[in-house]
Length: 272
Image (cartoon, rainbow, N blue to C red; front, side, top):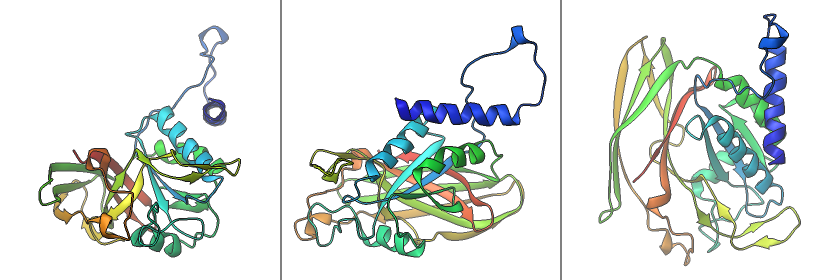
């Protein structure tokens, strides 16, 4: 992929800038060197179904996931703003009250835009590769774990335990989201056409807890565990909405963040 070649080139350039040791010519490795991921990185992709440039942003996120591993680059597509379609008024819409509120909260006025680990503010997709590289090589201030996850289809109820272990003294907010991939729905494409079979991935469906997370303070090496219960809504009641949730394609995204350090760690776990 041309896009992936560009990303690899950026990684190589960054490696050249940070290399200090002299190495004999016959011992040099010539080729793209992808740095080891020390922490996972969150890409919040602010997008819309009527945004012709947004598919390219989704491709950028996918390429970064392919480069570093999807477990290390967690992407979430947050539909909202004037180029989105609302699930409450549009039977094909993917924007919901929570995702629209995030667009407003972060002051998104151009789509696509993104935040990488909630540091550096809103950035265009051309800046994402460098921002991910900067964050992925850092030591995480905390570790996360999801346990006892169980979904009851009859009651549409999700139960899970989320643990935070601090690597240093930390204060932040713990956020739990539900996302869905493989959503086949309409999307405007770069050439202006409408693709009715476009596959939307990592769509933000809901926040399991407070939309801005639960406050948590931990001493170094301490662990705290939170239990969450969430009942999935019946979106088919929304004006004949034709984007029903498929729990087989859903994931739980958990991250711990604060305003100073950004996202200290993030993980993605399949719902089922």
